[in-house]
View 1 (tube, rainbow, N blue to C red):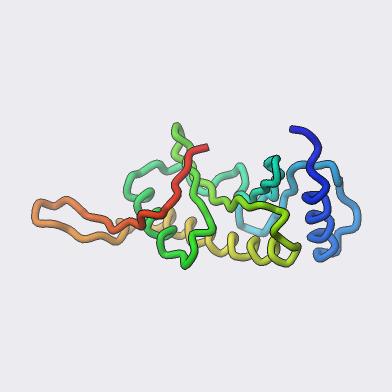
View 2: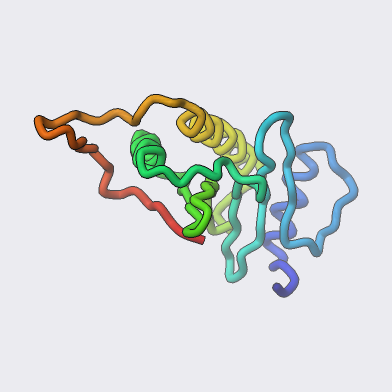
Length: 158
């Protein structure tokens, strides 16, 4: 990927200043934010005015169970504004959480607030994955289940 646009570099500089970081690579296209016992979150330049906050490569799960996927979709649907997307790897079923945005419309504080919210949502996703109970649904007479899914959900494959 080519060098990041100047607007992205300016945004990253503002973020680093807020975090008290004075020395960093201004030509990088990805920045890692690590938190204890949580997946890393990356701020990535995606080109043509787009950037993304995404959970790290250690992934949130390797569990491709259908019930888990439905529970995750239900969790995503309860967001007041679906700001975060779930991405599922087709082969492994690994789940990532991400937020893609036009960086020209954001300030450092917006990104830091979004980063905090992404950490909370990723924690909720991990809790859904970790629970052994089936997702909320209604059992029908024949034993099948119906799930109420938000039609505006975005489950994307990467």
